[in-house]
Structure formats: C-alpha cells, structure tokens
Length: 389
Image (cartoon, rainbow, N blue to C red):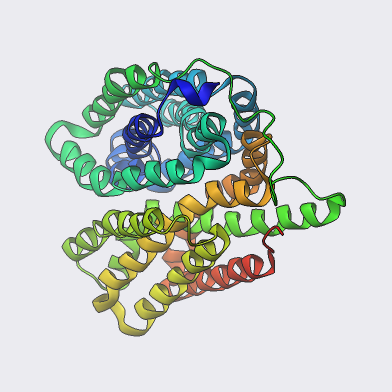
C-alpha cells in the first residue's frame, strides 16, 4: 500500500516546504515584480498581469488531466516534473527581451503550476492516506500559509538588490535544488485510494442528480473564492494604497496575511475532528465581506483588520477546497474530481486580476462592492450544500 511507504508527518513536511516555494515563485510573483518586468521589457503592467492570467488558464485546462494521472499513478512524477518546468519558466522570464518572450515564459510557469501546486499535492495525500488525509491536507496548508509572508518582502528585496531577473533565477534555483530533490523522495507507488472501502457518506447516491447539483454549488463557491484569492494575491498592496494607505502601511498589512492564514489553519488543524469542512467553508467565506465592509466604512485605518480577515478566510478556504470534496464525494477518483471542480475556479482566477485592475482604476469602492456581492453568492451556495447522511 502506498500509505505504508511514507508517514503523514514526512509527507506534510515535504509538501509543505515545496508548496511554499511553488506558490512564492508563481502566484505571488506578479505583485512584487510586475512593475519592474514591464519597465524593463517595454510593456505595460496590465500586459504582465495578462500573461499571468494566461498561466492561470493553462493551470485550469491541464488540471483535470493532471489530477486523473495522480489517481492512476501517484503524485511523485507530476510534482517532480513541476519543479523542472517551473525552473525553466522562471529562467525564461529572466532572459526575456520582448513582451512575447515574457508571455511564453508565463505559459510555461502555468504548466508547472498545474502539475505542482495544491490540487496535485492534495490528490497525492488522498492517494496515500485515503479518507484520513484531511489532517495531512491541513498540515501542508499550515506550512505553506507562510508563502505570501515570505514571497512578497523577499522577492521585493531581491528585486532591489539583484534585479527582477536575478530574483527569477533565485526562485528557479530553489525549484531545482530544494523542491526537486524533495519530490523525488516521495513514494513511487500507485495511490492507495483507487478503490476505497465503502463508508457512510463517501459513495455517490443512487440518484446522480443531487451529486450534480452539489458539484455545481461547490464549483460556484470555489470559483468566487479563487477569484478573490487571485485578486488579493496580485493586488492587495495596490488596493490598500488606493483606499488611502501609505505604501509602507500597505506592505505591512499585506505581511499580516500569511500569519492570519496560518492561525486559521492551525485552528482548523486542532479542531479537525470536531468541525465538518462544510461549516469551516461557511466561516471562511464570510470573513472577506466583513473585512471589505470595514475597509469601505473606515478607510485606511482598517487596512490591517481587512488583511487579517482576508488572510484567515483565505487560509481556511484553502483547506476546505481540498477537504470538502473528500467529505462530500469520498476518495474514489478524488484527483480527477478535484481537477474538474477547479476548472471554472481557475478560469475565474485567470481573468479576475486583470478585470480587477481595470475596475480599480475606475472606482475602488465599486471594485470592492462587487467582491462583497460575489462573497455573499458563495456563502449562499455553501448554505445550500448538504452534508452526507
């Protein structure tokens, strides 16, 4: 059995470290380097975010096939391949001399994201540990919650000291010298959860219609939260500055996101056997509109509370998007199902940063209002979901 070839603790430590680096060098890169990239290459910041959106589209379209491959053969190969592909994409950015060079490099990074970020890590954990994977999923996100706290200031510092090209090369080296060796220590075995035993609430009901409805409701909530996460990952400091915060205050507030994510994930880790993922998801979704409402009402004085509430909600929902499908639909074909659920989420996440940038240029209040309304929609979808009997 694959679950016997690696302990939960080692799996969590290994994937926690590699996911931290994976997110730092991909999802959190544009917020720190988009300005420097656009100036050096002779294009606009919007173009850089558009190229990043292209990477997210690649992530969306490749995700289901990557998840199905984990269901069949385990996570070791795609995760190892992702380390190499991310390094190639980042090196391509470092040597880019024209906008199309940079766009192509981002597409390569998008392929690495599809093969190496949370969905594949979660599917690997479910393959190794079956329905007992919830605690391990929480543990991985607990460690990787520091990605934004590390990535934003560290990448900005490297941009200042060695330039954005040097920063890209450092992250490329981290993938080859840290992530790849760690991924190669993972089990070669086929997943243990290909055909799990029947447990209450884990198998599909006889009538497929409720399952289809559950999938639609969950996919809608995932899409909204993915869009918000993608927007905040790329635009949190500029958003706070648009609300009147100074650059230093915006960066300081942004650095609170990581600790808030970790705190929420630690609470989930401690209470994992007491709280159903559906209740965790509902709590996660309401955090953002509360924080955004405070920001609109109080202005820049609420920058820190907004960042904390966003971070806590986003950190908790990151776990939920891995554990709730497991709780609702079981471990069978988990990787493929998770990949399919996240296709609309990736599509929304791909276009959301660019659309938000355009909306932010027109009206910061309107842009935040739309996000609040979307959060309410996601909360309604989670209220309509039902727990398995």
